[in-house]
Length: 237
Image (cartoon, rainbow, N blue to C red):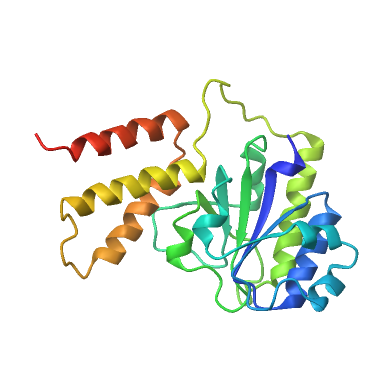
């Protein structure tokens, strides 16, 4: 188990102060990977650095991405935090379920923007969603507070070595990048067969298709098999 396997991903953060506070929060608990997607403020800036209070190296090494899909290519398992349940067939876990995760894998914790959280089209990339329990009449938590709660619990789990999850070393879980390649091939072959046609439902069909594959815990071998199936099904007889 390694602290370097854990990434904290801020999707479209709105405030410089929150970005800096999140950097400080993860450093407090020995983590060092902060990823930022399409931040509203200029990144980095003096306010971000000031509110990071000593976590300058976290900001310096922080990677900035234009979109969510590009940010998760080196993530094996993605947990999306959300204050609301979704009308999606996706696994939902509690904070206590974090002890069941395999922290030998590259795990990402995704946090939505302060203004609107995560959309359904962003949730589909996650393996599961997680809600931090709070006042049911006042569920919304400050971004940095959410990050520090998750960082504290995960840090404790790694230090105490409470993880009992083991998998054969011969089975390697597929990375998000490998799943993306497989999904893109599937969509490409479907489009070549005019599967979607001119349907107005194409966007939601694509969203549901991605949701199916991203929530599955596929192995690297399984993604290769499925890619081969998609490629061969598209061939002319």
